[in-house]
Length: 472
Image (cartoon, rainbow, N blue to C red; front, side, top):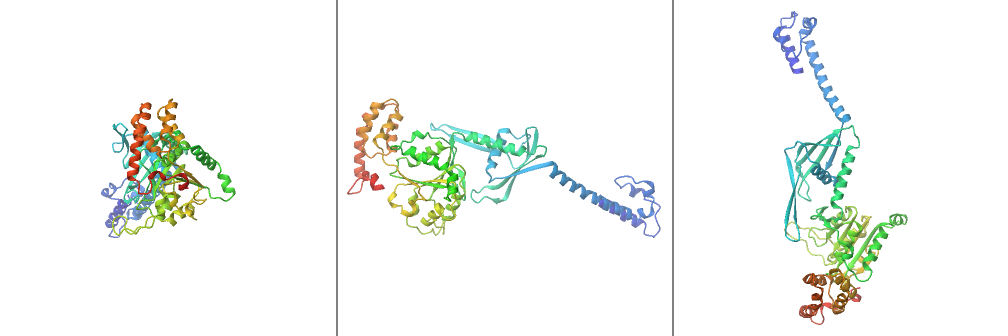
């Protein structure tokens, strides 16, 4: 508008080049104006000479900038927005909420495929349509919400390789708590989907990512340990969770460490899974043998553990093995793996975080230095050995309920053979509904097992010579 007024002013000045005051605006110039001028203004010689038109151009420019400023103020006062980055926990909650509620009037969608394969080999795929990058809208509790999903083409999450995304929600500020209500509803819906399930996290770069689909909670009674070990550990964890104020009042770091040691296949990792289900916790699995696991990465991962999660460090004896030379080539060239000192600092160093529960497992307890198993790093050490008579009997009863007499016969025959609970369970899998056949075939099975152990054992002993006293 100001450019048009300036052009008119220049035309008027050009026509007034002889120095005489023009009687008025020519019809050709007046027709180019956005609105008609009154006669007293159109016939004014000074106005038509260009001063008035220039002033009107300036006024229109100020009006235009004022309108833009007024629009910005109105947007800030009348609208409210919520920006959710893709690294925030609520990002997936809101995206799943949008899938459940639908995105109205959008012809541009993205798809998230859930592929499931059950134990019988049946394959099922579910397709969830989510808003694609761009602008969409949805109606929630009588309010229209504008959704804008932005994807950065030049910014990439180095840990996952995925582009950086943000989800921006905008609506009228008539309901100040609308976004909070939406987030709480999305959170509750996500919690309901995960209720009765255990989420397994694995490290991806410098953060934790869910591994696979959430698993159904394993019953606590499905893992049978000798004596009352299972209940004692559970009671100790409950006591720790209820003693937060006690730790703080005495200046003791609020963290708890457990070490499960014994022969392989005896139920160490299975017990942690069942314990997490009993507590309503999830599990973060840390693999110290990962070639990309360095000291600083280990410390960072322990510092960002998701809430209500047990940390499982399997085969912790790997960290005390002799340090290997860094690779000269490949993706991990020049990278040193996690060291024993790095593990100690991550567990109980100055930068060690609190409010966490760590379970460590090992098959070689004697190889662990005393500095690792001292109190403060390992508060409770539990031996989980080969199947005892009680465990054999209870395992038989779990597979074949009501067969007390056969369970006692089975326990007497298998006692002292040094069988792990994994071996016992594998044996029962061949006789799912035949308890008598399981007892009848136990003798030949044990005879073949003894021969195999003698052939594979080194000279001077057998593989079954590991006992509780020697392991401790």
